[in-house]
Image (cartoon, rainbow, N blue to C red; front, side):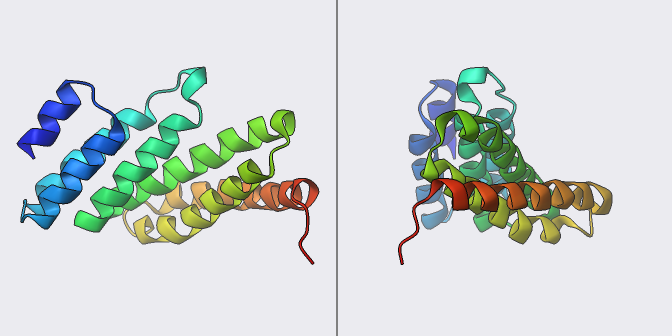
Length: 156
């Protein structure tokens, strides 16, 4: 845990931090502490709204939230993770028409599916927020399906 904090202070990449935290779990590090730290790193990543990071930031946040959830699942982590999925899907939805890239349409669909799986776990603690996020996810899912059909060649 200490090593991960030093790495974060040095500004090392998410891959390095996630590996260090994962190894910490394997070596018996306190699961609650790892989950809390990974969740805080995910929250920092999700707040990076610079235009150049519109896709990278939520992708990174999702990775931290997944690790936090695997260390210790909580309603809060599920909410943050599902919200990051919805943000990623929304950002992809706004970029796909310009890029017309099939893999981005598939990533949009995957982010929506992930949100639809994770968010209900937070429903007891955050019912209104989860309901709103699931409504947005459903709308983005419909749009993602349309984009996938239009942009991805069918393999019959």
